[in-house]
Image 1 (spheres, rainbow, N blue to C red):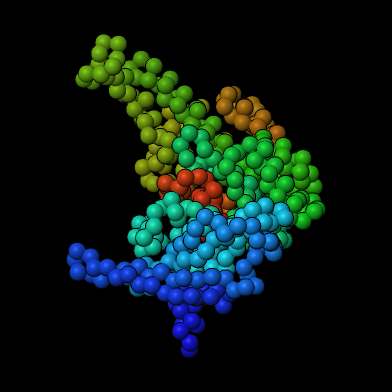
Image 2: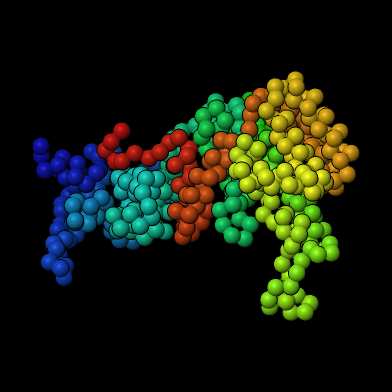
Length: 442
């Protein structure tokens, strides 16, 4: 093997690069360890010289640029490696004067493609500290690298190919009501799109991108599952009127749980206000400067939330006893519990039986004399078609909730990124079905 071929293999560059020379400056640290910096002087081959750095189109010479540039390459053992080359500018018919394209790095990057690829792989496999210490770069630099790696990956694939059944949801990524709208493919379980925001305009951008990828793709969407948010329903009805809209069962039962909790708090407050419901116990912030603790029935309702929320098959012995006590002492609260469980059972029935059971539940909730459930039945009536569609097609947001959980974990890992674009890029590389590979491997 010739020296040039060996150096190209070691530096991770292809035959489109010419290696003109190599310099090595050795350093010795205070602890006696030997390191240093290796600088390889390179240039593109003649056929690759006059191309626009942005689009790669052949372009005419413009000027020699400011000075020679360096790109960080993968380390050779303990030695840091840089590629150094001239950076002349060319005149592109589309982008105007711009730095010429080089075969070993992306436009505007300070690292080689092999370096970027290894950092992106490590970011999807390792902790934040492991990536930064191993590659000797800042965490914000990692964010910039994975953003351009995902942009390069997305440009080479059709992310929306074969898309038929989708789930839409939002997930918080930062304090201050900062949300991402995410779209997941039900058939593959892949995250296919994410953008900051949770409104009609944000979701509209997804359908714009879907239609731009290939005209007519919005009409090919057959099913859409969501949590019943009005802004999702409005956009889907406008952009995919032919799609079957399915209300996520988990969120529907969650509505009933929220209504049950309203009744639980009302029962607790009524019990505390009743004679003998509280007693003074030491210093506090009461009217006479004393803390007032619950007693009697109010004390019995304390911590009943867990017994009321959990599914019957998951109750502990103590929680079952708590429910039996509530049934005897507070029929109103027990009725709210039965309404919640009745709605949950609807989703466990075959479609034909579920239709009848849901109508019966709506009639029961309408006359139950519990304000929170009377309001809930109006909401259920409004979404009745999409609720029954979810049962008929056995579709839920389970996959989306799983993706959201993983995004929340990625959000903790990505803390410190300058922009949500870096977080989205890391999520797409992890969950989009196109994980990066280590350089030189397939």
